[in-house]
Amino acid sequence: MNDRSMDPARFRALTQRYRQLRIAVAGDFCLDRYLEIDPRREEISIETGLPVHNVVRVRSQPGGAGTILNNLAALGVAEIFPIGFAGDDGEGFELMRALGSLPGVRMGAFVLGTERRTFTYAKPLMISSNRPPRELSRLDFKNWTPTPASLQHRLIQSLRALARKVDTLIVMDQVDVPETGVITRQMLRAIRAIKKERPDLLVMADSRRSLQGYPSICLKMNRFELSRLAGKSRLIPLRAVGRAAAALARERGSYCFVTLAEKGIIGAGSEGAVERLAALPVRGEIDVVGAGDCVTANLTAALAAGASLREALQLATAAASIVVHKLGTTGTASVAEIKGLVC
Image (cartoon, rainbow, N blue to C red; front, side, top):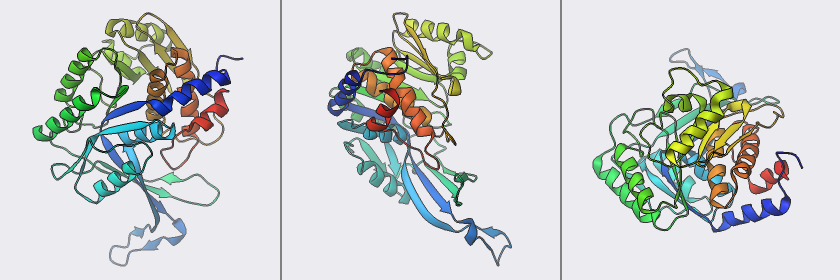
C-alpha cells in the first residue's frame, strides 16, 4: 500500500458516515451561469458592425459557497444547511431553484429579499467540436455597499439556531469588498461566541480576501495567505511552509491547511503533527476552477466523519484531482469517483 492508497474497509467506514452528517455552510452563495456559444452561428450586428455571439444553451448552478455545498451533496451528506442570501431577481430565482434541487439541502436559513442583488458569475463559453470549452471575459454581478444590519441580524440568528444541532460549520467568504457579503465582522463575532459555547464544533473557514481577524477555528488557505497570517512581507519558501503551518495550528489550537497548487497540500494539527501530500499527476486537459472549494468540502466532511489528518488529505487531494479534469464546469467528486483513486 503506497502513501496515497487507503484500505477499502476504512474508506467505506469513513464515507458511510457522511450519510449521518449535518453540515451548515455560511457564506457568499452565487450563481454560476454558463452561456454556451456556438462559434459557427456568429453574426455581425447590422446596427454596430460588431460580432454577435449566439448563445445556444444556458446552464446555471450554485457557485461561491454553493460550490462547497455542491461537493457536500455529491458526497451524500445527510443534511446541508446553506446560510446566505440572494436577491429577489431572476438570478436569485435560478440560484434558489438550483440549491433547493440538491439532495439533502435544507433552505430554511437562506434569505431571499430586495435588499441585495444576487451575486452572479456569467461565464460565456465558446463550444467547439474536438476541443475543450474556451471561457471568454466574465460578466459579474456583485454588491458594492455594506450588507444591511437587518439582514446580518437574520443570518446570525439562523446561524446560532443551527449551531446547536449541526456536526460542523463551513465558513466561506467570497466577496472582494469587505462587509458586502455574509461573513462580516458581526458574523465573525457570532462564530467566535458559538465556538466558545461549543468548543467541540468543527468549524472550517476559507476566504478569498484574508483570514486576518478570524477566530480560533480550522483554516484553509494558500501559501500567500499563510505568509500574511504569519506576518511575513515575502512569500514563505516552500520548504518552510510546514513549519509555519504547524506554528499557526499550535497558536490557534485548530487544524491549518495550506494548498500548494500542483505541489499538493500541507495539513498541520494543533498538537504538532504535520502531513504533506503531493497532487496527483495530471491526466490531460485541466480546469482548476472550483478545486479549492472541493478541497474545503472534502477536508471538512472527512474530519467530521472521524478521519485522521492524513486520511483527510488523501480524500481531499483525490477529489480535487477529479474536479480539475472536468472541463467547462465547476465540477464535483462523488464517493465512487474518489474511491477509484484511493483504493
